[in-house]
Image 1 (cartoon, helix red, strand yellow):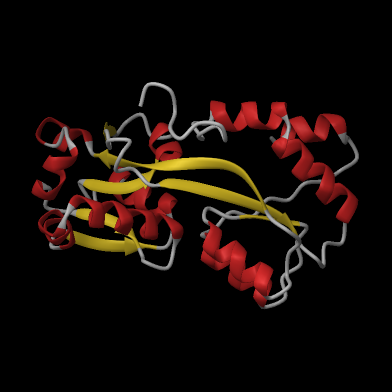
Image 2 (tube, rainbow, N blue to C red; image 1 turned 90 degrees about the vertical axis):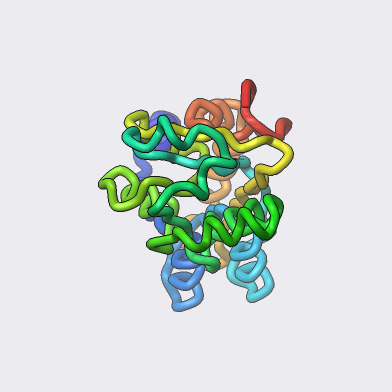
Length: 217
């Protein structure tokens, strides 16, 4: 997306900073200067809006959860019902969006399933990227991440989550009130919401705004 934006704004230098939504929110609360904030859930954006840090946010895309499995364990873990049989599971901490969405999923699956998963959790991470890394390195057999993360790791197997159980992660975007480049910030948000921007997001596995889940899943 940055490369596409630069083609239309050749003299603009873009700087991206990626971290868990809770970490980015904390940085802004402690005075970090930025132009635009994009969050993986509504909670952290709403807190910033309530405190007057951002202008009115807009939903710019959606995501869903996926269960990634190391290839050695894949023959034994093929459905969501098989996941509690894993000996090492990694999830997000409750304070991060991916952790909250995972908790929603486990709660919907029932107390027995949730208890079975929690008994096998060996690590709680601060971001979906860290969860993915644990499974990639073999430190866990199974991890609960975003669908987009699963697509970025073809060396891992993916267990499908039924659409009726899979939480929809809504991603809001907003311009910061202390933005040093408000006009360019507006241009970036317009680009993200444009047909071109939405096409790039969809190609990366994000859920189109008009749909609940990607086609075929």
